[in-house]
Image (cartoon, rainbow, N blue to C red):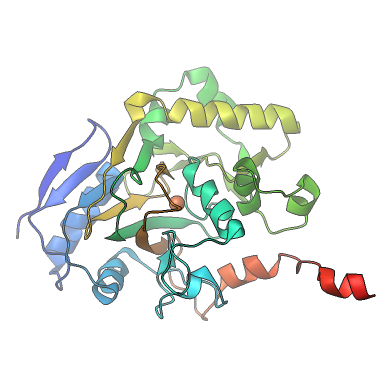
Length: 311
Ligand SMILES: [Fe+2]
């Protein structure tokens, strides 16, 4: 089986064809897929024929798969804990009308890297389209390696040893969620270098995202100005492209050398069912762990207003 690789931008993104990824793959084909992924950062596979099971099975060649938290709600729609729900449907499969869930999803429309708010970073995300809206709902990708390459030397020197602090709730606040700085302070955060070497390609890259709230040791407003400046730089037209989805398409992106954001669509009236596996950067843990459940456990329970009224 020989892979056909068609670049999307000169340095970033490629459509891969000539392989049936719904079937078991030999070692040479797997190596070719991984090499293409590491070189291009984002790869697009059209009309894959993948099911939940074969999606998960294919994903395992990239590494250890993250598991969704064990909790009731939108994420409990699939029995597979390896599938993150990235669409707009509720647990019963209808369009989600819960204002909190809608607001939560708005944060995904900002440029981000998946799970940068976790101490253990996510490497690859593999998103499969099950249902797509008739208009919009595309996904945009940004090339943080080339954006880093093109920075002036003075900026490379300035950010070389900086560390960013990331919080899931910071991106939600940016998207309009009513949460205070103090509430974010009280919840789980993670720190990661702003610049790192992308292991898959040996190229240096920025690791920035809408989740990045502060630069460690830098005055808050100065740090936030720098974060906005770096994200704006990396999302200029020469570094970005969008993927228009059809049912069955799979896009794999490497969170360690790219950012992405969801495109607008009529989410109140159109269904979008997207399911994602996510590969942890670190190898499989010795003991089963559950960091996403720990993350959500760090959120204080909402005040029960009924009880208060009767107190
Ligand atoms: Fe995402």
